[in-house]
Length: 545
Ligand code: PLP
Image (cartoon, rainbow, N blue to C red; front, top):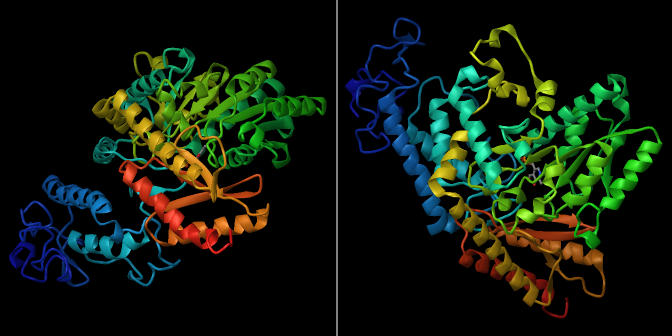
């Protein structure tokens, strides 16, 4: 980097920017004359801002993108490498205290540009300590947020094209690829034909599972209100189990459903925390007798707490019998259903009105990508369509085009299908199935460790890649047992070597071990178990336990 390139040493920034000879890569840095360096730009028309000479920015210069893009890819590739090679430098659960960043960063944004090098240095020194490393091979908390090279490249392409495909016209490929890819995925899941775009239904990629349940609650609400009249909104009742994701309640409240009309049916270990169909039917009968209008059932395949499965076959029959919209939330476990041996968990899906899974959880599609299929797309469109004049357009067969703005809350939308398409094409479904199977086997491996240690117990029947376990109570003292499991959780997570999470089932404090990060191998699972065992010895030795 030479002074002349940014105008005689007082040019581009404050001397810390691209002008100080320590540019990020090879000493030549951003010197190709296409970047910020042509010396003819200005901010206020006279080449000066606050008395200092400034070079006009070029927000999307292709050569600068090439150069800095390579730097960024290297940075990210090194991150993934270091997560594996130097895990001691990356505590899986961030160990910083609240507010840690405020002291490390200036109070206001810079007036003058800074260099990418400076910025990436700050990422390494200041941001990384505050990162919980979801992509670490020793990440076993919540459910994973799985990444892949294909998913990453898809995100990159999406960011590069940066189209906003709210109507077909605004990028026909964005709409058409989404339709095609969701048909592909529906076929991999063996969803009934009515969920395909060739029927009355179809798929749409929502940002998240929370958005998916919200839009279907709105569709179901409007469908029933059309029939019974808008004034009966206060009578509408929605059902789910007490294990259902909190987004269900939020969606109902946003949809105007009265809080007291949200029924969370009790579950327990007798059904492995799946919703008992008898309780559902009883609740519906009772509500009907009281003059309420049952309109929505949210069934879950793979609950957030324990990966419990609601029995779709009997629940679907009840939904059909009473004409109630049934939504299936399979945010996590739906991904496993591309494997024939797990497909049985969504048997009964033919009686559902909608089905959702998060491909960013366990299909290596990077955040965020939440495919939702509906049986009747017009229910969704009726609830969500808007037609401002400025979005009107004519195409030869207007009815034949999909305008995804009418299938979601927001107008703007990302071209998410690109990455799903790339994941499916660059890996192939058989690879994806095998990777999911590997994760399930790793979970089984962990479960075997737990089962062999008399101080621990596996708490629920495991179906997928989540193991729910705990230290066993001594002399039936459940309260003390909860306390010790809580302590054990805090101890293992404070090592920074692994991250596991917890839940509560039937008032018991339960530890969760979920496999799903793309770099996890058997050695990481074994090491995790050793760490857990080591930290449990406090409770299991000296006659304490
Ligand atoms: N449903 C289930 C079963 C989940 O486990 C989750 C998140 O973990 C969600 C819904 C919410 O998904 P999202 O975070 O994409 O909104």
